Amino acid sequence: MAYPYTPAAAGRKDAPATPGKLWKRIPLERRLEACTAFWQDEEGVEQQAEALLAIASHLKFRTKSVRALPLERKARYLATLPGVPDSVAGRVLVAYHLAHQRPMLGAFLDAVGLAHDHGVLTEEKVTAPDAERLKQAVASLAAAYPAADVDLYFRTLLAQDPETWAGLADVLAADEAQ
Picture (spheres, rainbow, N blue to C red):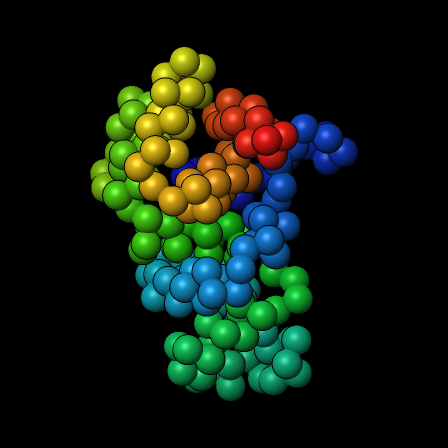
């Protein structure tokens, strides 16, 4: 998954949901899992600082007080914030997938033929997969993993890197039409 998040062109109707909008659609239980993974993610320090500020501002606490909270409380506060910045939501989604969905990530990247290390892309510049190969990879993943997990993964990829994963927009649109 490409990171950091770069927003799609404003006003485009075919643009995917931003990570923040996608985040709002996720059930609370899944958000709690994701937030726990986020606070344990050693690579998300910048976004963790942003999340601490957002929580402190919302609760009218000092940032230092929020930082000292136990993991479970920070996760709950972040999961229930009415609005999460796109950069934080994007990192939370990445942390969730890396902590809980690595086998699925690896299976998909293998199926589309992209080099990865346990579900993390190894190339800096990723080219969009061939449409037919993408279609086969989507079908393969849909058959092997729960639909909700696959849908969230595809929407996360599309929100994070709409150019590379534009072919997934058609798949998601077809699923919504059914």
